[in-house]
Length: 211
Image (cartoon, rainbow, N blue to C red; front, side, top):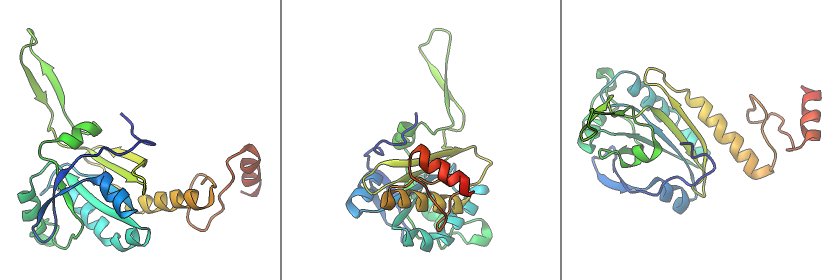
């Protein structure tokens, strides 16, 4: 179920940082209490293949997100202990040593279930008394952008084999910030510094006539 335009769920989830500290983290409260945007990205599993490339890519762009008043948070259904082991594994060995943003450890899958991003189906037997879970019961590559009021302004879900383009999220944050500041809307392929337009037919016509 899409949650764009709605408040992100308010739920405390276990999290781990690079220092090995386990703590509760509420994504909605992070946005509202700190008056910051949040990029929350889910990945399937620690110690896999595409996942570390994404975590390192977000780390490399962390300064750009910080310039945009945006907190980066990673998330999976692994335990805090597995997160910490991965954080202490060298990059050359497929680890994420050097990642400094927090990682949610949604082991009970409460938040992932609310967001409906788990790769799982339920199969019932003939008498419907018992059921089996079919699938890995881990998350797809889901990404949420949340504004300072806790409202989701972007969500996207990739299948397991398809990694994300970090620069696209920077562009989306820039576009949303432009809308917030100027009240203009951002056309296709808009980037910082390009023309935006007013949200009416006249604005569309003027933009199209120039481009």
